[in-house]
Length: 186
Image (cartoon, rainbow, N blue to C red; front, side, top):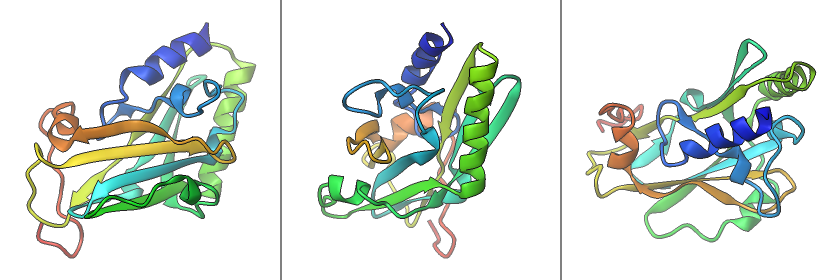
């Protein structure tokens, strides 16, 4: 029951990028749903596909896990993309890929949360909370963003955010604005 509830919770917010948007971990693998409690979610690789005027804030992007009465906030970190890079088509003109995974300490925290969830069955939630900054003034209705994810070794990339207008993404944040990137006037 907890897994079905988690799949429903995870699938609900796939269209939201900023703040506490849900990461649909259940759709990351092409062959089967990801089992949050048993698959190595700590190995999740995240690829931001962004226009040149946007950049991800790794330190502001996190996987937040609430399980067995505790919360784990695992911050995205630059990572060796391994086989993920080979699964990405060349970026479109004026777009860039940014690839992330989790730091070792956060991988350990994710695995500990999963172990807690297996020992203490019940409900849990997983949310993805990415952050973005802008390098120049932008039209949020015209700028489109995508976020892709894969389990390391699974090979299949699945969109978490599929070519959505930034304005739609920000609307879920009650009008939250994208700050200027450090060193840029935004």
